[in-house]
Image 1 (cartoon, rainbow over the protein chains, first blue to last red):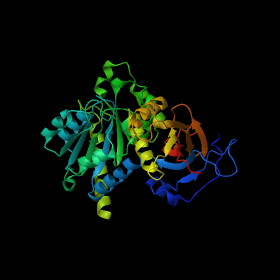
Image 2 (image 1 turned 30 degrees about the vertical axis):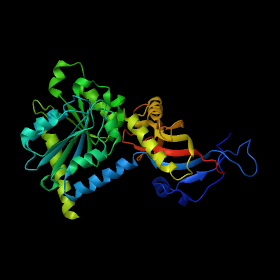
Image 3 (image 1 turned 180 degrees about the vertical axis):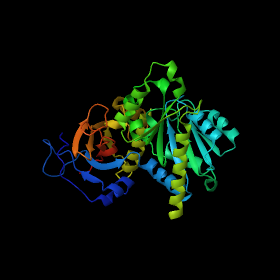
Image 4 (image 1 turned 45 degrees about the vertical axis):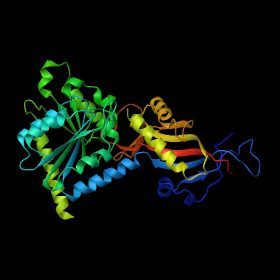
Length: 270
Length: 117
């Protein structure tokens, strides 16, 4: 049977599902190919939906974005492979301070509160989110982040950093209402990762090349790492840094502070 | 494994739409459009779809995945091309390019058999 021959379009009002309402669901009659008769045809028919599969996630993300903007909070979504140094960077950042701006943290992991436990001694607001043990989601989705945000006092925050689940693929797919996506790549991961995991590096507006203090001990070339990031995302800002020695840390902190200032100005303007 | 999350989302949406048809209507096929930039593995998504749809009205439906190539445009040059290597830099002016297609993640259509014309 040839279903490619579509001739029948009906009013979308018959289908009250959200997809039909929002996108103009089209209804196609199939089953009228070579074997069809001129009347009373029966058989499968195709319904065009054209629905974004991430629509539900994106709706939650927009709610989060609106909430953060209303409170003048700048937000960054920190993403990387496991062990690239996200938590170490946050520790170094909190140790150094944000020139009077106040930071809160949402820690995302499949399991354990280990990361939140490392951040807690700094006396800031921190919420640990677990996606679930034994094969929980490998990324943070907006509904989960929304739940965490409701546990925070946004009035007293200037910056919110969300540390995503360690994974260089899936977190890039999900908008969590952040102002900026930040990707970390440690020099120990090798030069080719931006080319192997392009979506993550393409989506990020800031790329942090971490653990630069280890460069003398490795057979990797920092220039090649930077060039590979630029091949995938020529407009990304790139900051090489070491949370251990503090090299490059000021530039990262200035980036956060600038974001916080812009968010505060935008809030005042509204 | 974002394929499992995506498959669960597909089944939920299709089930929701199925409520608009006669009881007993069955889903013959589900067609998705997936951009190449999405890093979705079609075999993995098909496997997850089969697993997640078990015991639902969507069970047994065929999953059709239409892969969309990545097309980009360089604003200064106004040239357009399909990206085959992972390179988002204009070969002429080395400027950043805009992605025109290749990020799709759409439930494009479902094929329903509800015994009606």
